[in-house]
Image 1 (cartoon, helix red, strand yellow):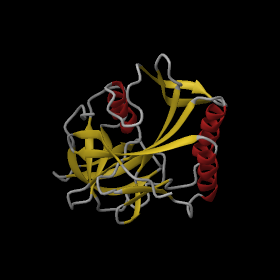
Image 2 (cartoon, one colour; image 1 turned 90 degrees about the horizontal axis):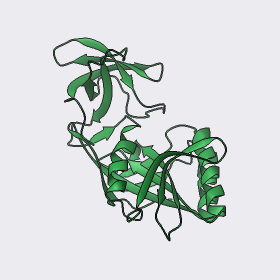
Image 3 (cartoon, rainbow, N blue to C red; image 1 turned 30 degrees about the vertical axis):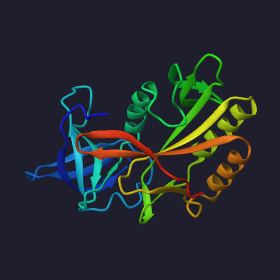
Image 4 (spheres, rainbow, N blue to C red; image 1 turned 60 degrees about the vertical axis):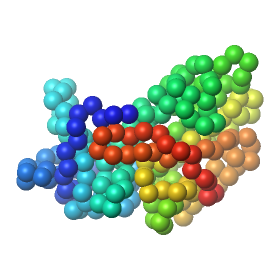
Length: 234
């Protein structure tokens, strides 16, 4: 997924009210940027960090900039927009480029299922079991090479595990896909110390037929693209 508008480098001044950040562009201009991320962004919102923002001239949007990337200034990036992975993943699923989820004839985003939920993707093909795919964007990294989910307590994520397990109980494929928006990640684990209930729920879901996959990403100021599968450290 290529960004619609060329990104601009900036420095983070502060993040506040979950979805807002004060930033300073390279020319010294200060602006407010929208953040498409409801999580804690642990380790990714320290004042002074180099970031990349996307400008827009859409009169329907109140803010002129959207925060898209953290630049770790060592050749690695983290994507902070949680909507970006689904847009990138949809194209890869349609093209059959996601290992374990390839060769499906039909890709339906945002389908109702479970108890008032919407699954990210429903995959269908004649003669195959439907695959219900829930995508989680992973951005937390506290140990070199290890990406972890979640970065804060997630009651919504726990509910989605129950929804997936219900689909598995009905004989469908139920897949939790960790899409890691960090280029420095080599494996994926669960932050059980941050959310013990989620860790327990994931273990129970796996024991009852829910599949867990992990996929890396290629990230640059040009865009975000799905990359190779990553091993699980669960």
